[in-house]
Length: 374
Ligand code: SAH
Image: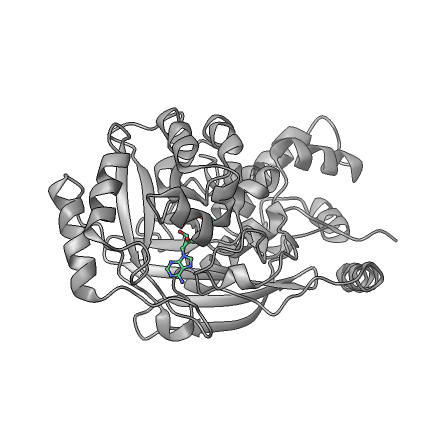
């Protein structure tokens, strides 16, 4: 007996192929894909029984062959500032998602990998070894869990709670390009979840060769984790800089498809006491970004157990921000959110570790059995 396929995360073409494979009549398959797409991504249907406009025998077939599985919620924590963090489990691995409500928007911070390869020195996720890439279903599943929990369906309702998505959770999205691309295509699809590309931001530590492709093929907004203005400093705190230097990174930004004054690239800059927070650094930052349609986001460093850095003093952040402000960048400091539940930028980490091959196979088999019908 075969495991059931999760419909969440399949492209329309993949869904069509899966339905045909399950024996759906080729004459009606395109219509079926449209109907299912609407149930999945507009209504967030959790089971096939709810799909009342579909014939009973078709629903029975769906039930037999497919699932609408979300990642399992291990814990849900709510910060005293309203930020929520979910620890999720899927395919034997754990990863985190964070919802940040603000007066004019609600942002979901989504993970792309379990662990990370980059080892940025100030980032908690960087202390967790890379375990694996998340699948499109797992990336999208984070949005599904959040919207289920927030009662945030249907997608077409006014006043939706999750209005923005940032790929700023665990992992480097440009090292999981295909899955992130597949998931974001569904997020931005006008007939479903329908978040506009302005409300979807992909953040990268600077995988330069993938930036142009991200613009061409994903088309979301872009954020760059810059964090330093000199290669000597960036080499240490964002080690991918040893491979792709600041100048190359900024060149890729200059030619990022779709960037304009109306659609700026966000430059994230974590404020590390005595490391990158001098006024000379602030001036150099402004100078470096000249000619790039940019927003600057100063992020007060969020501490975690054993972190080798401290957050810059508040007065220093204000002085730094003033230099940036005077150069024409408005409100550049990001308010820390959810620190009390370790949900703030760079605090995410799960207990998942990379398994030996034989344990991985056993785990996959267990997951497969758990998915079997009946
Ligand atoms: N790998 C991608 C996606 C992660 S985004 C990237 O690097 O852009 C997470 C953001 O939070 C990045 O800008 C990251 O540099 C920043 N960050 C990491 N640790 C932090 C910490 N302890 N305090 C504040 N910001 C942090």
